[in-house]
Image (cartoon, rainbow, N blue to C red; front, side, top):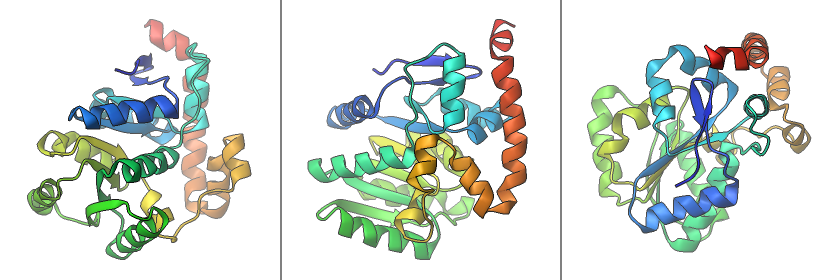
Length: 246
């Protein structure tokens, strides 16, 4: 079992990608159930007031620092060895491992067009990978039993959930125990990137940990949200130890 450390009102795992992949592999081989939640600043902030989101993160077997703000917060908490692991990077390692071990994958999320493009591109890039099934993310609550049955009948080992925040986390919260998959990972907008409809921020921004700045430049609608979250983070960072003593 991977070590878990408290982080404010949530938690974090200090494992590197190799340790995470080894843990995921072991769980699948042993037919155990586990899921991973990549934690970024938006999720951290929302979870303070959203009890359902907070619960699914606290119950997660693995929580990774998916953003430089979370890494800084970890350092403020005294966890110097925690590094950033982007959810999409972990997901691509999972895809490679799934191909090598012939594990079956189910993709849930994105639009009907983008999920099909995503599946086609993944099949080409990871030639021979076993894609057990897929379904777009635009479904109504009354359709969930059908989708649950579709996932279970696919005999998938791994479920990748590529919906918005907090819809993907809510889905894991409400239905993971009813699914036969061994491992689930929330991947946000990865499906749209794999579909070729969106691009990741340039490598230079990723290495500097300022993807949020790039997003605010090309997506003006996010600029205000990023600014508000930035102010919240500064407050959380400055008063972190005080908050955790109370």
